[in-house]
Image (cartoon, rainbow, N blue to C red; front, side):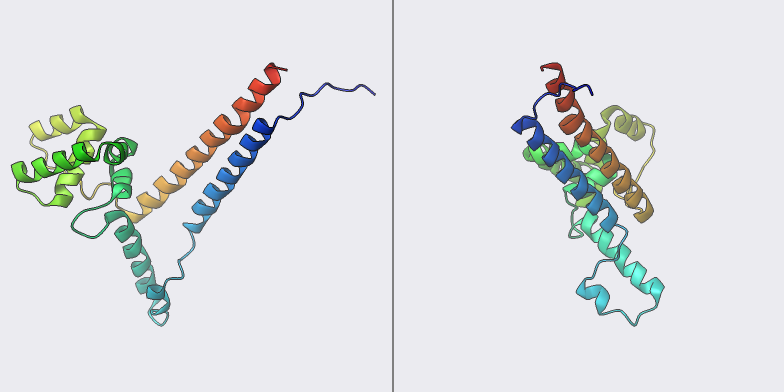
Length: 182
Protein backbone atom coordinates (compact mmCIF):
# COMPACT_ATOMS: atom_id res chain seq x y z
CA UNK A 1 0.00 0.00 0.00
CA UNK A 2 2.10 2.90 -1.23
CA UNK A 3 1.12 6.44 -0.51
CA UNK A 4 1.53 8.96 -3.27
CA UNK A 5 2.67 12.38 -2.30
CA UNK A 6 0.11 14.84 -3.52
CA UNK A 7 0.68 18.55 -3.44
CA UNK A 8 -1.65 20.21 -0.96
CA UNK A 9 -4.51 22.05 -2.59
CA UNK A 10 -4.04 25.74 -2.34
CA UNK A 11 -6.89 28.16 -2.00
CA UNK A 12 -5.79 29.82 -5.26
CA UNK A 13 -5.91 26.57 -7.25
CA UNK A 14 -9.27 25.59 -5.77
CA UNK A 15 -10.69 29.05 -6.46
CA UNK A 16 -9.43 29.00 -10.06
CA UNK A 17 -10.94 25.56 -10.65
CA UNK A 18 -14.27 26.63 -9.17
CA UNK A 19 -14.31 29.79 -11.27
CA UNK A 20 -13.45 27.86 -14.45
CA UNK A 21 -16.13 25.28 -13.71
CA UNK A 22 -18.75 27.98 -13.14
CA UNK A 23 -17.73 29.75 -16.36
CA UNK A 24 -17.86 26.48 -18.30
CA UNK A 25 -21.32 25.60 -16.97
CA UNK A 26 -22.62 29.12 -17.62
CA UNK A 27 -21.23 29.09 -21.13
CA UNK A 28 -22.75 25.68 -21.88
CA UNK A 29 -26.09 26.78 -20.43
CA UNK A 30 -26.01 29.85 -22.66
CA UNK A 31 -25.26 27.70 -25.68
CA UNK A 32 -28.07 25.30 -24.84
CA UNK A 33 -30.55 28.15 -24.39
CA UNK A 34 -29.86 29.22 -27.97
CA UNK A 35 -31.76 26.15 -29.14
CA UNK A 36 -34.87 26.84 -27.06
CA UNK A 37 -37.56 29.26 -28.19
CA UNK A 38 -37.77 32.18 -25.76
CA UNK A 39 -40.93 32.70 -23.70
CA UNK A 40 -41.39 36.34 -24.61
CA UNK A 41 -44.73 38.14 -24.61
CA UNK A 42 -44.35 38.64 -28.36
CA UNK A 43 -44.23 34.90 -28.96
CA UNK A 44 -46.87 33.97 -26.40
CA UNK A 45 -49.27 36.45 -28.03
CA UNK A 46 -48.85 34.54 -31.28
CA UNK A 47 -49.46 31.02 -30.04
CA UNK A 48 -52.38 30.63 -32.40
CA UNK A 49 -50.20 31.56 -35.38
CA UNK A 50 -48.91 28.79 -37.62
CA UNK A 51 -45.57 27.28 -36.65
CA UNK A 52 -43.69 28.92 -39.56
CA UNK A 53 -44.92 32.36 -38.47
CA UNK A 54 -43.71 31.77 -34.90
CA UNK A 55 -40.30 30.70 -36.19
CA UNK A 56 -40.18 33.85 -38.31
CA UNK A 57 -40.89 36.00 -35.24
CA UNK A 58 -38.11 34.19 -33.33
CA UNK A 59 -35.58 34.74 -36.12
CA UNK A 60 -36.59 38.39 -36.47
CA UNK A 61 -36.02 38.94 -32.75
CA UNK A 62 -32.61 37.27 -33.09
CA UNK A 63 -31.73 39.62 -35.96
CA UNK A 64 -33.03 42.62 -33.98
CA UNK A 65 -30.67 41.66 -31.15
CA UNK A 66 -27.71 41.70 -33.54
CA UNK A 67 -28.85 44.64 -35.66
CA UNK A 68 -29.87 46.99 -32.86
CA UNK A 69 -32.42 49.72 -33.47
CA UNK A 70 -32.36 49.75 -37.26
CA UNK A 71 -30.45 53.02 -37.66
CA UNK A 72 -27.27 51.35 -36.47
CA UNK A 73 -26.23 48.05 -34.95
CA UNK A 74 -24.54 47.36 -31.67
CA UNK A 75 -21.21 45.79 -30.74
CA UNK A 76 -22.65 42.28 -30.96
CA UNK A 77 -23.50 43.02 -34.60
CA UNK A 78 -19.86 43.94 -35.21
CA UNK A 79 -18.76 40.69 -33.56
CA UNK A 80 -21.06 38.54 -35.72
CA UNK A 81 -20.23 40.36 -38.95
CA UNK A 82 -16.45 40.64 -38.77
CA UNK A 83 -15.18 39.06 -35.56
CA UNK A 84 -13.47 40.26 -32.40
CA UNK A 85 -11.15 42.96 -33.84
CA UNK A 86 -13.90 45.49 -34.73
CA UNK A 87 -15.66 44.62 -31.46
CA UNK A 88 -12.56 45.49 -29.43
CA UNK A 89 -12.07 48.71 -31.38
CA UNK A 90 -15.69 49.64 -30.69
CA UNK A 91 -15.35 48.89 -26.99
CA UNK A 92 -11.88 50.24 -26.27
CA UNK A 93 -11.50 53.00 -28.89
CA UNK A 94 -15.06 54.29 -29.36
CA UNK A 95 -13.93 57.72 -30.59
CA UNK A 96 -11.83 56.15 -33.37
CA UNK A 97 -14.70 53.88 -34.38
CA UNK A 98 -17.30 56.65 -34.39
CA UNK A 99 -15.06 59.03 -36.31
CA UNK A 100 -14.32 56.35 -38.93
CA UNK A 101 -18.02 55.55 -39.40
CA UNK A 102 -19.02 59.22 -39.60
CA UNK A 103 -16.28 60.03 -42.11
CA UNK A 104 -17.20 57.03 -44.27
CA UNK A 105 -20.87 58.06 -44.24
CA UNK A 106 -19.97 61.57 -45.45
CA UNK A 107 -17.41 60.45 -48.04
CA UNK A 108 -19.43 57.62 -49.61
CA UNK A 109 -22.92 59.06 -49.02
CA UNK A 110 -24.25 55.89 -47.36
CA UNK A 111 -26.42 55.25 -44.31
CA UNK A 112 -24.97 54.39 -40.91
CA UNK A 113 -25.51 50.62 -41.25
CA UNK A 114 -23.52 50.49 -44.50
CA UNK A 115 -20.77 52.66 -43.01
CA UNK A 116 -20.55 50.46 -39.91
CA UNK A 117 -20.40 47.32 -42.04
CA UNK A 118 -17.58 48.76 -44.14
CA UNK A 119 -15.62 50.03 -41.16
CA UNK A 120 -16.01 46.68 -39.36
CA UNK A 121 -14.65 44.95 -42.49
CA UNK A 122 -11.83 47.49 -42.70
CA UNK A 123 -10.79 47.00 -39.07
CA UNK A 124 -10.93 43.21 -39.45
CA UNK A 125 -8.82 43.15 -42.65
CA UNK A 126 -7.66 46.56 -43.94
CA UNK A 127 -5.72 45.16 -46.91
CA UNK A 128 -8.50 42.83 -48.05
CA UNK A 129 -11.10 45.57 -47.70
CA UNK A 130 -8.99 48.07 -49.68
CA UNK A 131 -8.28 45.48 -52.38
CA UNK A 132 -11.98 44.76 -52.80
CA UNK A 133 -12.76 48.49 -52.99
CA UNK A 134 -10.04 49.06 -55.61
CA UNK A 135 -11.21 46.09 -57.70
CA UNK A 136 -14.67 47.62 -57.97
CA UNK A 137 -16.44 44.90 -56.00
CA UNK A 138 -19.28 46.40 -54.01
CA UNK A 139 -19.95 43.97 -51.18
CA UNK A 140 -22.77 44.56 -48.77
CA UNK A 141 -20.79 44.27 -45.54
CA UNK A 142 -23.89 45.14 -43.54
CA UNK A 143 -25.54 41.82 -44.42
CA UNK A 144 -22.47 39.61 -43.88
CA UNK A 145 -22.87 37.24 -40.94
CA UNK A 146 -26.58 37.94 -40.34
CA UNK A 147 -27.96 34.71 -41.75
CA UNK A 148 -29.72 33.06 -38.75
CA UNK A 149 -28.18 29.64 -39.39
CA UNK A 150 -24.72 31.17 -39.65
CA UNK A 151 -25.31 33.11 -36.43
CA UNK A 152 -26.26 29.95 -34.54
CA UNK A 153 -23.22 28.10 -35.90
CA UNK A 154 -20.96 31.03 -34.97
CA UNK A 155 -22.41 31.13 -31.46
CA UNK A 156 -21.93 27.40 -30.91
CA UNK A 157 -18.37 27.39 -32.22
CA UNK A 158 -17.43 30.58 -30.39
CA UNK A 159 -18.92 29.32 -27.13
CA UNK A 160 -17.21 25.97 -27.47
CA UNK A 161 -13.81 27.48 -28.20
CA UNK A 162 -14.21 30.01 -25.37
CA UNK A 163 -15.13 27.20 -22.94
CA UNK A 164 -12.14 25.14 -24.03
CA UNK A 165 -9.72 28.06 -23.68
CA UNK A 166 -11.12 28.99 -20.26
CA UNK A 167 -10.70 25.41 -19.10
CA UNK A 168 -7.12 25.21 -20.39
CA UNK A 169 -5.99 28.55 -18.96
CA UNK A 170 -7.94 28.52 -15.71
CA UNK A 171 -7.75 24.83 -14.77
CA UNK A 172 -5.09 22.82 -16.61
CA UNK A 173 -2.20 25.29 -16.70
CA UNK A 174 -2.52 26.43 -13.05
CA UNK A 175 -2.83 22.77 -11.93
CA UNK A 176 0.35 21.79 -13.78
CA UNK A 177 2.21 24.83 -12.50
CA UNK A 178 1.16 24.03 -8.94
CA UNK A 179 2.26 20.42 -9.36
CA UNK A 180 5.70 21.48 -10.67
CA UNK A 181 6.34 23.82 -7.76
CA UNK A 182 5.69 21.14 -5.16
